[in-house]
Image (cartoon, rainbow, N blue to C red):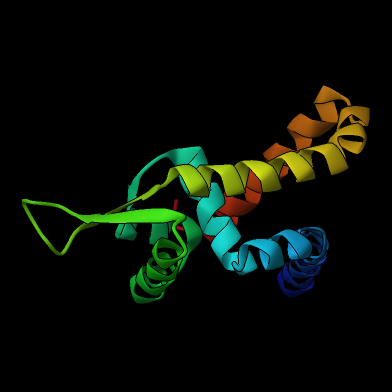
Length: 144
């Protein structure tokens, strides 16, 4: 298999997985008036804790301008809080509010319940191999 065929297969599988998860979360996104991208931002903040716009942009492979706009929308909905650093007002920290934590917890709990049985059917060796493959792909496709 050549590189382009491999890349296209990886893209296809990733689209299919992301599409299935988006379909599952669509009612929750609608309920909370957020997009799937905004859900992903909340999920990263939930996992990582407070981050600067720059760090959040890097983790999500997004332009800082787009990230800043998304975080502003999330703040307007009461899900995040943006605070400028005193030492440099260009640097903005983003964190989840209590309401943001409740929303992401609700959505993650739903996904966990939905996929828990299928996930638990996989043995630990298979789970480890899945992560290992993604680590290899990350090294292949990124500068890391």
